[in-house]
Length: 296
Length: 273
Ligand SMILES: Nc1ncnc2c1ncn2[C@@H]1O[C@H](COP(=O)(O)OP(=O)(O)OP(=O)(O)O)[C@@H](O)[C@H]1O
Ligand SMILES: [Mg+2]
Image (cartoon, rainbow over all chains, first blue to last red; front, side, top):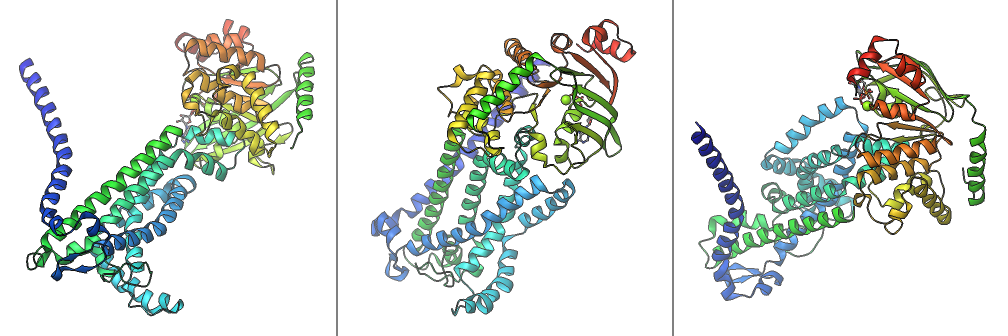
């Protein structure tokens, strides 16, 4: 009997260690795999040229990834600027000001938004956002635009990120203890002053990490963005011009990647770039959280 | 609202003069207070007079409504939307439950000390300055003066004077609790509401808080919730025993604990501690 229990004890621990090793090793394997596959490309061009050049002529073995990197950054930047304030304000409202009932009502709504497949967001972008930009918004600024633009990509991406970031922020604000709010109120603060000086301040590490994870997710989001962003290789940051983010490059071209020499390596390299950039975003935000926790 | 440093010192002096002629007129009077949460009748027709510059101890089994009663007194019940409060609470002839006075101003008349210390997420200095700034004081010198004075009042000044701009997280729980007391005193309350302020503390820190209360009662009225009978005996001028949302008995600790009238109090004294 005791044997059996000790055996189970050992076995379960082993399983846990095994599972965690898989989680640890997996990203490493992916990174190495991508690097190995992308390696032939480095014989043609240096890493600096690959990242900084903006000439994209696969047939002539000219692979400059700058337009794609910038495309991703532009779209992500717009998405962040649009979604961050909305998420922050709604999370504060839902956790601090609204009734419990309304919160119960909102939870499934947020979950539905979070669970929708990205194709649906893409389709919604095509039938609503794209025409809206080409017919109303662009003319308003005196610009002619097809509607398939960086702005459309950014808007669609923002809407996709909102439930994701919002859920995390709600979690963050719910963990601020009631006693802390009561302390601030009893010192004579109004409710809004309490939210500003105590709830938000206490939540800053959480807010930063929610935004960080949101940005990382936005950066890698492919399908919906690809459907509305226009997919044109260029480096300008103009809201009403088309762009071409990294993930879209991979998704659009993996089918023909073997037909052009070096093209497969180039696509693998773009995947590697994506991998590294998302890793960097995560590291930077981890560092921010560490800093704010330290000086809290 | 905006006092000069001299005026503040004068204010302190008048309080010191008042020490000598302690009057027993009540600062706080509760009439027919009822609190409901849905069907749950949490406080049942509470009537209570709190005399000035005394320590009133609220005693009673867990869940009898002591915390709720304290929260009514500074209207923290407002933020719990499921609580319905009715009745009257008079502080200085102002019925705070039915008044046009701003709620933050009412709350500044009471200092709240919780079961656990909740330092605000800012430096030690700013924790104490928080309430002073909310009162509209901007003069740096005066804020410095107040911060120092109130940290000294709770005996924390020497321990933190070199670390004023650190996070309160570096302090021990007992020190944090004294910091919370100091920041409450900094807004110059009339009444201190203390909800089991020593229950999370070690014996020595508890002793320090207890001794502070003994000094503070010269200038403030203290309403203290505690589960420690001996603490009640040591500190109380008046004990109010509650059970199940009602006030069962009240009186001086000597009278109440020597000759408990109700069966509930007898039982509480046997099992309660
Ligand atoms: N927001 C609320 N909603 C519903 N019921 C509540 C709420 N706050 C308190 N109660 C109920 O009111 C009763 C009294 O609670 P309270 O916290 O005042 O008790 P207490 O005397 O302070 O107990 P303890 O000694 O354990 O701190 C409890 O039965 C509790 O369940
Ligand atoms: Mg309580």
